[in-house]
Amino acid sequence: MAKSSGLKKAALDKPLDIDWLNDENVRPYVFMRTENLIEKPGAHTKCNWFKQKPIFKNPLLMDEVAFGDAILNLESKAFQKSAMPMPRWVFYDCALLPGFVGGFVRKTSTLSETYCKAMNVNQELEWTPLSLFIIIPSLRKGEWVAHNLCTANGLVGEQDQHYALGFLTKAFGLWHANVEIVCGMTQWQSPSIRLHSHYGPFEVLTAYTPIHSHAETLTYRSRINGDYWPTFFTKTQDAKSKSASNYVASDIVVDPKDEASLKAFQRRIENADGPFYLNPQEIRTQALDAPMKIYRLGHK
Image 1 (cartoon, rainbow, N blue to C red):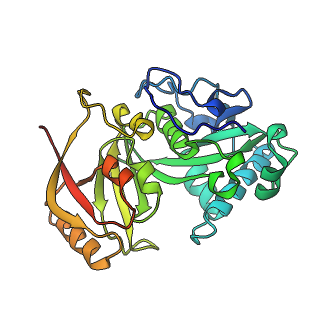
Image 2: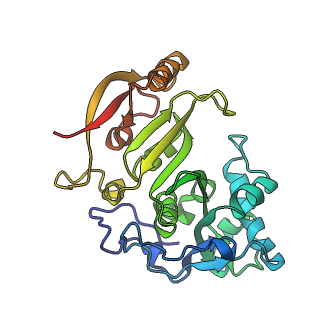
């Protein structure tokens, strides 16, 4: 499978120079009931990255159960180590019925033998899911909740990986569904925090979340801003961008591996001292367990 090592230039108005993204054997997919299909995909965030026509599948049809099983197989393997695989009923009740389920698929006939063995691929399927992104609409207008994001990249050898698959899977979903605001959850020392912070200003809603299965969970909210997307590849923010926000350091420094530090930050949030943000460029360049500066948004 073709894979790129990185991009020196990236822009929303131009196709990305990533081999697999432009491969006819790889397509985006949307797995949701017909009544919920997005009327004008891509109307909110103008982006020319996703040229391939999505494959649409209806989870209410019995004949699509094998495709759904393949998604659950991927998700189960991806979250097995964290002990947070998604129950089958949650997939249907909380994702397929009310929300958006999508990602990327590859023609099964083009998958390598090693990939098929590692992922226990159903050879009877024409298309095999490579990734999964689930978002659920919130009561707040224009806001969605990111429920699940996973890919096969961490489960297969380097030769079978697809460069930036996780980032582009979430980007496709946010773009296709015209998401204006997304909320989500991640853990402080998880590598996914580097990915989730590149879609817009990354506001921290909770720093310590004891009602969650993992109390060290961070709840975030991002107002989708296309200026942030190319920085995932270029690693720098365009200083001339009119809609890009500047980060001003607050007096808070949080230690992701110290429960007391997370709780202290949480109290500041509860006392309405914020809003507070993480700086995506800082997260990208430092160790995940290193102390993090907390920022406010301002203008220089």
